[in-house]
Length: 79
Image: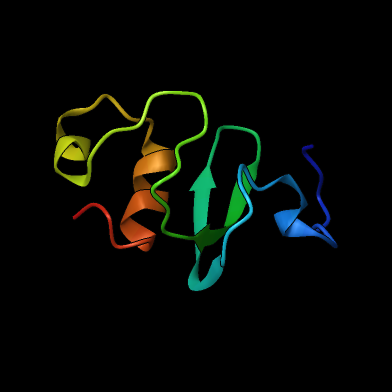
């Protein structure tokens, strides 16, 4: 859910249960009428929930929104 207050349980909506690591970097993306601040968590897994999954090598060639690119850079997955 979108809210202007931080979640009290940010991992409650994680796609799969894993040992999630909170990253220090906060991602900020400015839209025309508001700022989006993202706290990034990452985990490694061999299980993949439904959806499209790209390899790290494929990421630079994909049409990814700027806010997502900033997130991937903060996680060290995109240069």
